[in-house]
Structure formats: structure tokens, C-alpha cells
Amino acid sequence: MSTPHSVSAEEFLPRDTADVVRTVRDSRGRVARLTVSGGELLDDGLALPDHRAVVSLRRMNSVLDINLGKRTVRVQAGAKLSDIDRRLGAHGLGLPIVGDHRDITAGGFASVGGVSSASHRFGLFADQILDLEYVDPDGRIGTCGRNHHTERFHRILGAGGRAGIITALTLDAIDIDKDHTWLTTDANRFLDFDSFVEHAHAEILRPANAALQVGRWVDTAPLKVSRPVGTGQVQLGTVRFGQWSSLYPTTPTRSLRARREVGTRTRKSLGAIASAASGRAGMPVRNAAAGALMFAPKVLTLRDAEYLADTVISSSERGPAYRVGIFAPLSSYSSVFYRLHDLFSGHRERTGCFTVISAMTYGVRSAYLRAEAEGRNLPTEDHGLITFTCRLRPSALPSELLRDIVSAIDDICVSEHALRYDSAD
Image (cartoon, rainbow, N blue to C red):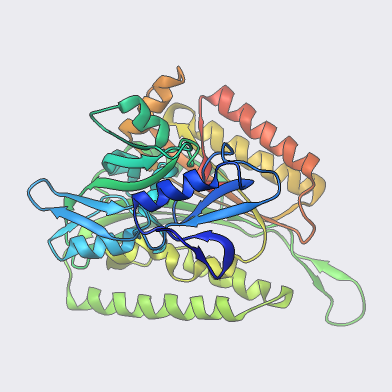
């Protein structure tokens, strides 16, 4: 049975679906809100104004069954995708879509749809889910899937947990050896934003046989440094650069293997530097390390490539930030990109609320997403994901300014027939 853990008087650690049912039912009318870690959030339907309880799914982390004939895997919602993928690898299988960090769980990724740099080939993580089991806010167990209770299935997937707690999932797998599938990077670098957006759009439209694709853009505020002699400051120019990387299958050679080892050691060293540089004085070091880490190396394995962002790049991005992700229809992709960039850079110039503005983008060809668009009476076409991360200045973003930004983003989505990707918030 689920029991409180010493970390918090109201942290519950269920081991199976029955424990989750008991926890949900026991909490009704007793807690302000039941939240779930290692999975997703429940809706505000579990309430009491002044108390809070957390359900952690980290003990619900088992791989329940691998069906080699059907190429499927059944897992508990708290299982990490990296662990599932490793288990499948022993059977010559792998997950088509994994998150870019090793701690992402199956239930958590499903609850936000799930996207990766392979989404131009395989769609969302939600497209890989055959069926799932969940517990609704009343503590009732339900099941739904791609071919049964499909309306409920779509309501739960990507809902951020508002329809209940996902407890188990059956996932599709593919024939792949990620540790011995080698990729080479075709990289294009840009100092001009217009050229970057144009190239990204063209690559998303025509990805050829790219196994992975990703574009990244970084745009800094003017840097002010103290004069070496005397008083006052010198204002340097902005730093604006980007790279589009398409990764293609290649045949490994001794030279490629050696380059991969050098690249791996370099990324680990940069990550260590970024982690060690603390405080405001260390910000230039962290930013430099992040800039170096953000670009894909020339050659690497598929497994390395999938978790490239997990090479401690996050440690170079400490501090508060505003994040948003948008699925832009390919017909309005460039317009959405420009409008979002103008929105954030404009606020940086007028209010000074942001410092570094960075963007990441890749293509998404998803049956699930097209169905979502159709359900909202939007054009059913392929999309490009555009995510912006805006580093905040030390002072918090004022609530009235945040409301203005959110309202402007909503206006862009409505006018361009775009969809928000909630996991980036």
C-alpha cells in the first residue's frame, strides 16, 4: 500500500495501480491538491485549501513485458525512457521517440505528447502508445488506446494530467541497434536570423533520409563590461548565431570511432566547466560552455545523439527563464518563428526583462497532432516545433508583463493556426 515518505508528511510512493487508487480516494476532501512527480499533474478536482500531497511514481518503474513478436513493451508510468530503451536494446529493439534527458518517464512524456529530434520521422511519443491504463480524479481505473475508447485516449494524452494519472502504457518499438547505429552530422551555421529560419523551413519540408534533425539559435543582449582603467562600462555588441544539424546514417570506421571518443570527452569537459562556474561571475563561462555544447559533433552513435542535451548543458542554463513551445503548421512556420522572436526581443529592448533568447526547432509529422488540429477545426498539415527559452534578469518577471506576453503568444497561435506545446512552459 502507498505510504507517506520521510521527505514529506504527504508524499506517497505507490508501487502499483491499486496503490494509486487508494491514494486518490483517501486524499479526496483532505488535501488542497494532489500532484504527481515522476509522471504528471492531476487536475484541481482533488481539493482542500491549505494542504498539499505529492504522489511520486518513482517506485512504479518496472518494465512489465516485452513482446518480441508484436514489437511492443508494457511499462509502468514511472519507468524512465532511457531504462526502457536499454532493456529493449538487449533484444535488438528501441523506442522511436525518447526525450533528450535520461530522467524523463513514460507517463510524464505521454502526458505532454512528447517530442524529439526524430519527430520528423516518427511523430510524437503519443504516436507510439498503443494503449494505456489510468486512474481518474475519482479514483477509478480506466483503459483506452489507439483502437478503443479513442476519444478518451486523445483526451488523456497531452493533457498534462488534467484527465487523471497515467499508471501503465504499452509502447511500440522498432528494430534498431542504437549503440551501433552511427550518424554523421551535416551542419550549417548562420549569423543571420533570416537565413537561419529560411534554411530550417526548407530542411523540415524536405528532410531526405535524416535520422535526426535540429536547429538552434542564440541571441544575446548587448554585453556591458567594466573598463579596465577608470570608471564606467563599455557596451559590446550582441552575439547572434545559429546552427542547423541534419544527422544521417553512416558506416563506422576507425577514424570515425576516434572522433566520437574525442567529441565525447570534449562535451564532458565542457559540462564540468559549466557545472563548476557558479554565480554571476561564472555566467560568461557557463554561456560559453552552453554555446559549445549546443552544436552536434560531427560523428556519434544514435544513442549519443538522442541524449546530446543531457551532457550537462542544463547546468550552463541555471537561473530563471521563460519557456514556450509552439507547433507551427508548415504553411505558417516562418511567420510564427519571426513573430515569436520579435515578441521576445522587443520586450528585451523595451523592458529589459530578458537577457539571452534562444530557440530550438525541428519538424514534426504526427498523426496524433493532425487529429488534434482537426478536432480544433484547424488545418491538418505537418508541423514544425519552435521552442523559445528566454533567460530572465535577476528581478522576477512582473505578473502584468507576463500576462501581456502570454496574451500575445495566444494571439499568434490563433492567427497562425498554431498549437501550444505545454511541456515547454
